Amino acid sequence: MSTPNPYAPPRSNVDAVPGEVDIDRLDVSDTWKKRFKAMQKAGGPSLPKRKELSREEGKAIAGFNVIAFFLGPIYYIAKGMWKKAITIFVLGFIALLIIDVILAAVGWSAASNATGIGFAVVWASLANADYYRKMVLGQNGWWWGKG
Image (cartoon, rainbow, N blue to C red; front, side, top):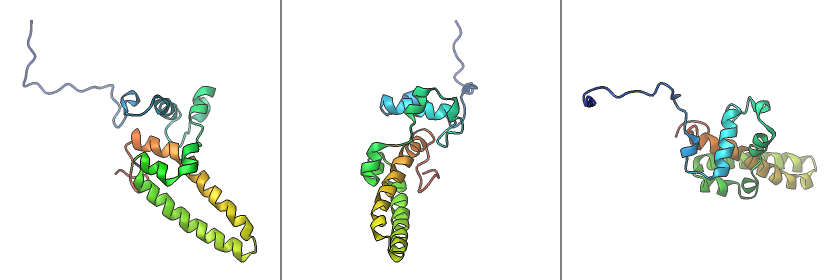
């Protein structure tokens, strides 16, 4: 029986891909694990290989998060993405203010009520991809940076 050499350098795992996270080990629900695996198969948060997914996988990453639609920045903060919540809120508030002023100037002030719904759609559309970036890619900066 041979004893391992305590002075030998550690063995490396040549199969491991740098920066890749084992999704099954993440501290998230099974639903999120399913979404993350489908997003990873689709090529990441921008989903360049979305057409290669099965119908079930495509439904898992539908891209619209209903909870984020109704709760917006509160949902982001609860998921630990407070920096991104601040960024999206401030940029969105400024954009809404400009759009509302323009609509009021052209006499469409009634249409400015719909801009709030558009802002909620932005939150709902970005939430799943942003949570993937945070949990799988480790990006949680002010926008997409590390952090």
